[in-house]
Length: 208
Image 1 (tube, rainbow, N blue to C red):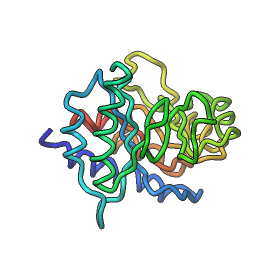
Image 2: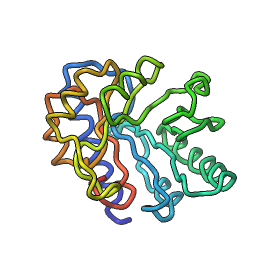
Image 3: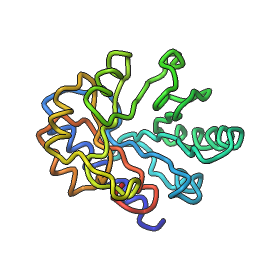
């Protein structure tokens, strides 16, 4: 975990450079979103405790809590503890696939009616999926996989040109997910991406 903070800081800076290079304005207060994954991460509470606080030279992050492999009660209890730490540091907490009291948003809700005023993000793997989500009121989407990713080894990726073309046709903020690091983010400059989604950053790695 020694290089965890520098990696997150570097990814956040890359995400904000990506947004600055986009001609499309974006009101979201974060440009880097970190996803939890119980298959790839160990002590998630220790990892969020090690996150830098949002202040001055470090803008807020969004954390999407997944940990789908846990039993429901255990998952919800862990999510509550993680949420409190994340928000105490000035970051945003989104619960995947369901609401959580006190959360700032929901990722991939089972029903859009469950949003109850929350911010909603959606996974997007095709133009049609993104357009449908936008029509239903999603606030942002994570387009993936833009590059080859350790989360889905061997899976076909969109590639920067196709991903940028899809982002240009989507009427909501688009975050690039899949194989994102400082170098791959540079390959997306000039497109309409408003940020980066990452999983591996919670593993002391800048690629996710």
